[in-house]
Length: 447
Image (cartoon, rainbow, N blue to C red; front, side, top):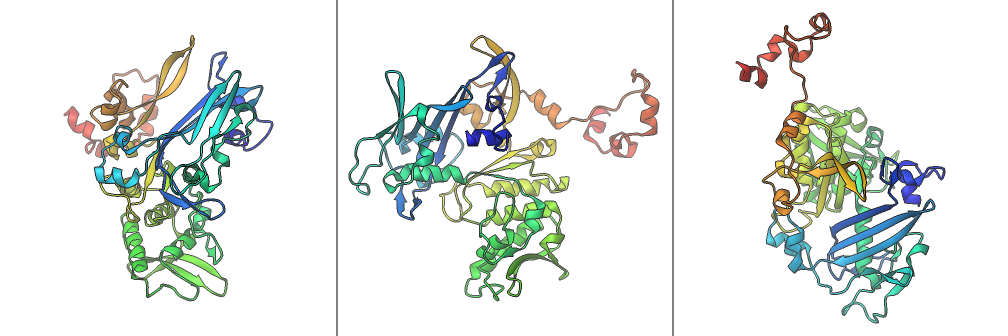
């Protein structure tokens, strides 16, 4: 309930939780279903710092919730395995066999979490890992579903349930980045966390860790790879703004602060607080790109904010390079990362790779005699998604064209403009200027 209330109610207990369930007319849905397939690390540690090794790394997690008398209850929860022999069918996007073998490891024959019914009661069972690393085994422990205040997965923490522990840690690592300029500009105390926060805080401390900067020591001379990292970050930033020579962290022992600084080609140095919002966001993503510990799913809303339209391709290249390259084996140089971007910008949509595009298209559907509008994901034809799910209608080209060209045509003199012609002549749009029109593709097509 706490998680559900935080979706839109910011934890306010007066918030009506049923408003997050789908409604169509007078009909109110009372069920919510989640499904995710994920690749988890093979090794990690549990909450007590003990080594944990997953029995298998490719998992499928499902959770069904039901609203009863303003209370959320679990109807079903499961955590199952996907073996290497089945992986290619589930990983429908183009990838190499070497990459698949590097990320899908282990084998399993029984679920890790399952749900069954006994009479009128529903039980969620937690199954222990099996194998030489896990002695004892034992019967799965059942939990009465309607009494559970939280999911079973959220409460596992012992090494005998290593796979479930690592699955929970993987899901907790998924982040929605909402990079705030005030957080990005702030210097960091020496004791600050050394990982970038979801709002962009600890940018300087993160770069200090990557470049091995310590107190009273601007750069560790015994770590040449640290200099290579800062050089890569500076080169990446130069794709956005011209004249970038270097990016570094300045340690201040008197104030015990790390401050991020940018040096231009003429030697001028700027602190993070004097950089633009778009530059700081781009810099944060460039630092994430070079941080092998930053793994999992990264979600961003409208990454083009603060970026000049001519530099949007640079942002898209950075986002693409942030994600794992499935043509090569996963490694510290090619960490397992997925990037999901939400945008309303035609300039972004026009320049992403066609296979990366998903469009939320509102469609009219009827379920259990109730009709209403629901979003449905669509993709372009002749892409890997179209081949993987041939029964799903592809995105209509006309919708793409109208989205990419949202500008209304210039009205002609013979059109009835409802007395707006004189107003338009007094205040012409930028696109209506003759010296602009002659350079537009539509102008040449009409000649």
